[in-house]
Length: 200
Length: 200
Figure 1 (cartoon, rainbow over the protein chains, first blue to last red):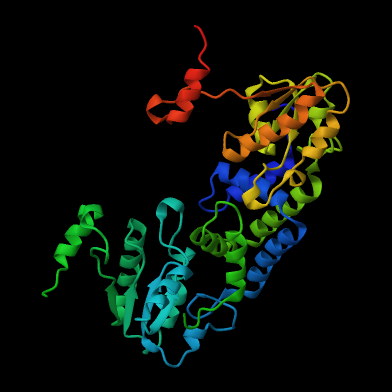
Figure 2 (figure 1 turned 90 degrees about the vertical axis):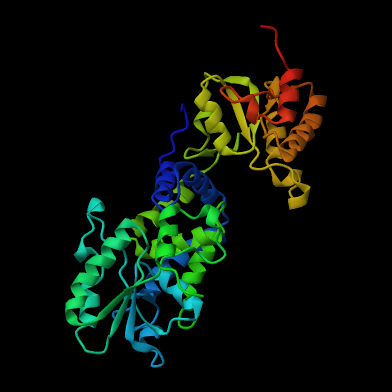
C-alpha cells in the first residue's frame, strides 16, 4: 500500500499475533487500540505485565504460580499430603480449588508430552514430580490431564513411571457432563459414560 | 479460592480484559501466557508497544497515523487534492488504499457521533476537517463512515455543515457485496440495492 508502511505498527501487530488465540485481524485491531490508549492506560498495561512477571514465580514444590516462596497450598498443613493431583496448567488448579471438593496437593506439569511439537519428558515438570515421590508420604496420584491424545499419553507415561514405586495412580472419570445434553455428547464420551455407569 | 489469591495475576488479567474483543476467559489465558513467555519475548512485546506509541502519531492534516511529520499521502503531489474521503478509523484508510482505485486524500475522524456514549462533534476530528475546507481546493467530500446508525448520523451531520460551503458531499453506494449471497443479504440492503440498480 502506497504510503502505508509503518514498521512500528507492523511490529506491534506481530507482537499481538504471537499471543494465543489472537488472529491477524484481532492483532491489528489490538495494535491500533494500543496506540489510541491514554498514556495512563498504556502505563498501567505495561506495569501490570512487569509486576506480574516480577512478583510471580513457580512454587519449587508443586510448580504452581505463587507470589510466596512456597505456595499456600503446599504449605497448608490442613491438606491431605498423601494425594497429588497432576494437572497440565495453573488454571487447572484454580478449577479444582473452585470445586472445594479436593483437599490434597497438586503438581503442575506446565504442558503435556507432544512428540509432534517436540515436547518430551524433559520439557515438562515430570522430574520435579518424581522427586516429590521419593519420600513415602504420597499414596495416590490423580492424573488430571486433559482427555486429549496428548493428555492421555502423558497420563499413561507418568503412570508407567510411578506404578513400580507402589503408588496408586488414578484417572479422572469420563462421562456425560452434568447439565449437558445427550444430543451434543459425542459417541466416544457416551461409550465411556456407558462403560462407567453406576447403579442408582 | 483458598490459597489462590494472586493480586498481580488479577491485575494483569484485568488489563487484558480492557482490550477490545477480549473477554474474561481470554484475558485470563493471555495473563497466564504472558507469565510463561521467555524474558526476550516479554521484552519484545513491551518494546513493540512503547516503540509504536513513541514513534507514531496522527498526521496534523488528515489525522491518519504516521511516523513522519505529515503523512506520505498528504504529501504526495500525485494525489487528487480536490477530493477527501472521510473515514472513521485509520484501518479504513488501509482498506481504501488496498483497492488502488482511490487517488484522493483522506480525513480520519477517529470515531463517530454517538450521543449514548457521550461522543459529540468536539470528540471526533470534525474541526480539523472544517479547517481543511477553508481553502478553495476541495470540491468533493466522500462520506465513508460505516453503514451503522452512528456512521449515518455522522455522515449526515458533516454533510449539513459542509454543503453550505458549496462543496459536493457524496456517500458510498449501498448494495449487495460482490461475491456475497442473496440468501444472506438482509432486506434493508436488498432494498438499497434495488433502489440503486443500474442498467446493464
